[in-house]
Amino acid sequence: MAKPVTTFVCSACGATHKKWAGRCDACGEWNTIAEEAPLSQGPAGKGLGAAKGARVALSDLRTEEAAPPRHSSQMNELDRVLGGGLVPASATLVGGDPGIGKSTLLLQAAASFARAGLKVIYVSGEEATAQVRMRAQRLGLADSAVLLAAETNLRDILTTLEAEAPDLAIIDSVQTMWLDTVDSAPGSVSQVRAAAHELTTFAKRRGTAVMLVGHVTKEGQIAGPRVVEHMVDTVLYFEGERGHQFRILRSVKNRFGPADEIGVFEMTGAGLSEVANPSALFLSDREKPSPGSVVFAGIEGTRPVLVEVQALVAPSSLSQPRRAVVGWDGGRLSMILAVLEARAGITFQGLDVYLNIAGGMRINEPAADLAVAAALLSAREDAALPHDTVVFGELSLSGALRPVSQAENRLKEAMKLGFSTAIAPAGCKISQNSGVTVQSTEDLPRFVGEVFGAG
Ligand SMILES: [Zn+2]
Image 1 (tube, rainbow, N blue to C red):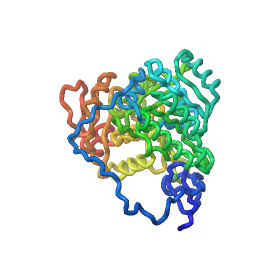
Image 2 (image 1 turned 90 degrees about the vertical axis):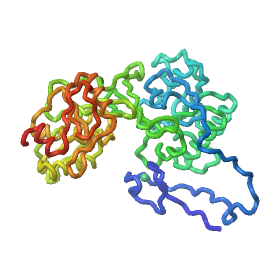
Image 3 (image 1 turned 180 degrees about the vertical axis):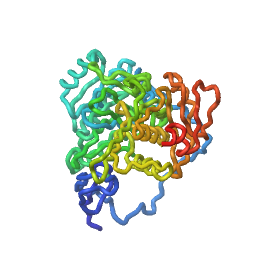
Image 4 (image 1 turned 60 degrees about the vertical axis):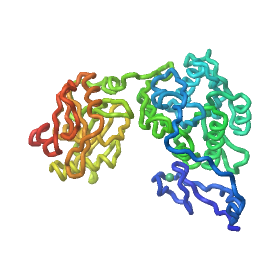
């Protein structure tokens, strides 16, 4: 029988490596690889043998399943991200940076579900029950019927959950839970995976919805939420800059609804409050038209959202000019700069470039390319775009503009917020009566000529 070999596992992404290294090849994080106790390899070389199992019933694709019943949290933004409400027997992971407000959000959700008549158990492995109770009082939730426990031993927790049979169990956080059968420290990849596996199995077996909190960590000793993403039905990330009051709950995976849906919250003294109209909020501190500022008409999940893209271009004293990005992909910025140089002859050599998405928002859509290019040009030329204009469109390496999806919805949202002009790729399907004047552009050189003159 082969001797079990020790493996080295990245705590950020869960990739396994044969030997230790300072940097993970799979995700690029530094200092996240740690040694893991080997898993049992099972009886080696035996296979299943000759004994036959039972035949499994097969069905065809026409069989119709009823849509899963859902419980509303009475918080529209949370329901939207969950795909229309909480599904019984589902496992949901809520990840995010420590201190961003995950416990606050889940305590509010717990109270809300309890008020709607669900039996809710909130297990905290991080805080004593007194601390959770104090937070509940601060949030004005002290009168709700949520059951609390402070425990980290998963065997005790599962025994309790089996006996109580709640509709919803919230585990805060999965990194503090430990199984007495797993031979490594709480927070290690094997403990976190085993705990998540036990809890999701429990959810399926007993029909309880389970929500797991997972902290995004930078140290190698504690496994991050990514190592359990594949086990759960729904993965939500709670994002936002700590200095900003806005928080965004984003679904990156959802077996019961659309992914990439966002819910927007505002952090207030009394906890998180929902933001029904995020566009108005992201644009609220926009003053006069200013160079470098462009409004992007984006789509997040099924909802149009207008956000402000801000760029600053300044002479650089460095031999390698700075490229700093907040809220967008740095590689994508390099691509836009290269396309601007190669296809429109506009160079950013010797210039520092800063790009920021206002309000702590993060954009993943390629449809933001044109808005980013416009912001960069506007900053470089020191020429502001008209105040009432939104921009969207994907840029290809050839400099051509590609049509993007849901152009109508983007325009509708722009009209609702008082914008009268949109700059969009020529190929977009747009009906004439959208209420917004659309300036269609075919490629980048033409866009530069039309919007910024000869450059
Ligand atoms: Zn990794």
